[in-house]
Length: 104
Image (cartoon, rainbow, N blue to C red):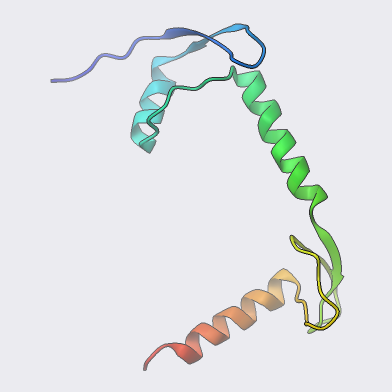
């Protein structure tokens, strides 16, 4: 039995404006296994996503890679007693470690 989806009018919990949750968006939610309807309008969702991205960017710390000497950023405050690596060197080290630990 196929379910027919229809556009649904909703009210944004953030700004109080009415928005339409389209049948296509509902199908997308179902395909992704998302169980809850959106609570915010598309504009408020975009703004919240941008705020989260800005918060992540603010929490980044500038570093100089202990391996190659290039500048980079990490999402934690580096300690002076431990080496810190740029993304590329970190990935290279992680891959090498995983290879050395896998049984051959």
